[in-house]
Length: 430
Ligand SMILES: Cc1cc2nc3c(=O)[nH]c(=O)nc-3n(C[C@H](O)[C@H](O)[C@H](O)COP(=O)(O)OP(=O)(O)OC[C@H]3O[C@@H](n4cnc5c(N)ncnc54)[C@H](O)[C@@H]3O)c2cc1C
Image (cartoon, rainbow, N blue to C red; front, side, top):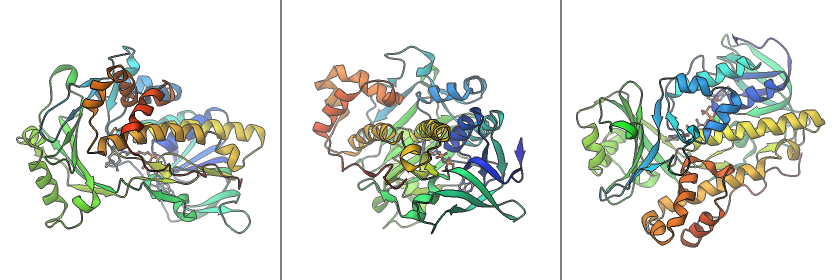
């Protein structure tokens, strides 16, 4: 199943990166009978942040055929999200089942190494050739190597350090925050007002709510509301705890390093501090930053970007893996259509761009609402209680399934959102 080096010299599609986005696109294209190679540079998955899913991932899991594996897993059942103000006042949990009792309104808090492995194994099951410990070192283009290409293959380096050229008709960049193609072509744009960083770790033996709330994600503002914490219950009596705030506030002008900052912020968040007071820190502190960006286009001649390689919004609503899966799914459909039609132009491979971006933009508006200190969801829902259903649809991730236009319009009357990024999207170059 997993090879150390590719068996052939040529494929229809090469996918670089075996995270959720890469595994999804590889699985769904291979399922249609195309020859797909996926190269993943790690030999095995280690810790990865991004442990909380939204329920709408259910539909991609169903399409991938992994629902039973998810249900049989030891991942924690997540049924709601709850928010705390900086004054320590909690909302009622937003239960995802409030307006829809179907099992798709439940989701999971996952251990990413196990989750990513499950999706990668599934890509191989559906016919993709998966090579571990293999790095995509270079993308090869016809002509003078500009992004109007077309892409014709990759140079890979295997675990023994052997370099090989592999040909393909379509190259999918699924390299996550490495953003290989966006960097190469200078397509990356930072989200203007979300220059955030995060400091996080795991605790063992921290407080867990009983019953239906055991797996709830809890989002808590710190006193003064300059930063917020996530609290995500995981298997093995482990809880993921992280703080997010502006880079300027959380990283620059702080003394004592990330560990000291993390604990200083926790002191401003007594609800979290109490919950972990008797727990043991189970992982060194980690830091992430500069994670909110988007590429100005999603596809070109012979290439496509999926997941974080294209863009990532913000961790607040746990939508990163959802968008990675969804973009993998949509890109797979565009690639299969393009291969069948013999049209591998940027416009053809990026035909899903507009729809995908519309969903990202919807979520982006909700994100800016959370960070807008003049805006209050409580006040908003008090004035328009009928919009609660739409808010829950958004928290579920139902942005491609349910009409939430009225909610978004009402929100945009109160929350200012910077201009959309990435207008070029699919571009004319293909
Ligand atoms: C602080 C923070 C908190 C987050 N919390 C959440 C959350 O709670 N819920 C959520 O859904 N999302 C969360 N996310 C986002 C989530 O982690 C990502 O959106 C998600 O992992 C994206 O999946 P992906 O497949 O695009 O990329 P990745 O999961 O990053 O996978 C990319 C893969 O490509 C491989 N790779 C890279 N370069 C190469 C190369 N040259 N050759 C071969 N392989 C390569 C890497 O080894 C990796 O396995 C969070 C992000 C941050 C920064």
